[in-house]
Image (spheres, each protein chain N blue to C red):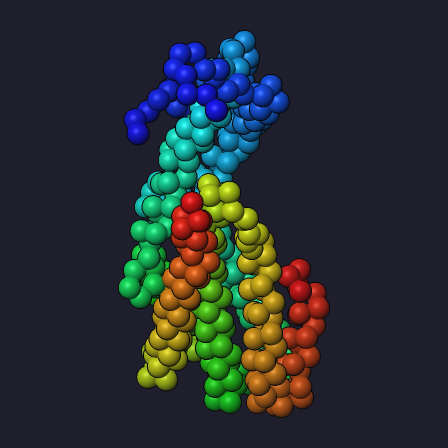
Length: 199
Length: 150
C-alpha cells in the first residue's frame, strides 16, 4: 500500500478500449451519413400525417383512401343495381311499378350505407396509421423495436373485402325483384362480381 | 445542457472524428473522452429529432381519446351524408329516364341516413378511444419502462 504523496502512476486506459471507442465513433458517423436522412424522411412523414393540404382540404392520404373506398362501393353497388334492373326489364317488369321501386329504393339505401361505412372506416384507418407512424418513430428514437403497419394498399384491400361481403348480403336479401324477375337479380349481381376488376 | 457543437439534423455525427484522440497518451483516457463525445452527440440527436415526435404523440392524448377525434367525426359526417346525397342523385337520374318525378326525401330515407350517421359516429368514437389505449399501453408504456430502467 502506498501512502506517499507525489507522483503516483495514473491508471492507463487499454489500447483495446480506445480501438473500440474509435470503431463506435466510425460506425455512428456512418449511421449519421447513411441512415439519418432516411429516418428524417420517415419522421417528417409521421409528423405531417394529420396536416391539411395546402388548400385546406384533407391531405392526400385521406383523399385517396376515402375516395377510392367510396368509389369502389359506388361501383360495386351501382353496377349490381343496373344489371339487376336491366335483367328485370328484359323480362317485362314495369320499371314504374311500386314493387320494383320499393326494391330499388332498398338497394339504393344499402348502397348509400355501404359507401358511408367504407368511407368512415378508410378515414379512421388513415388516422390510426398516422399514430402508428408516430409511435414507430418514438420507438426508433428510444432504440426500441418498431412495428410494421398497414400500408394504404392493405387498408384498401381490407375495405374491398368487407365491402364485397356486405354487397353479397345486401343483394342476397334483395328478394322481391329477383323473385319477380325469376332470380335474375342475384344472377346479375353474381355475373357483375365475376367481371369486376376489383373482385 | 447547452448545444456543445454545431448540430446538423441531416448529419448529426459529422463533426465526430473517430481518430481525434488516437495519439493521446493512455494516461489521459482518450477512449473515455471519445465515448463521452459520442454519448453527448447521441443525446443531442435524440433531443433534436425524436423528442418532438414523442411530444406530438403524448400531446395527442385526451381524457376520452385523441386530438384527432374532431377531424375524424367531420370525415365520418361527410362520408355518410355525401354518400346518401350521391346515391339519391343516381336514383333520381334513373327515375327521370322513365319519366318519373324525383324521389322526395321521406321520413324513412331520412331515418336511414340518420341511422347510418349515428352508427358511423359511434364507431369513430370507439376507434378513437381504442387508439388512445393503444398509445398508452403500447408505445408510451415502453418509453416509460425505458425511462425507469435508466
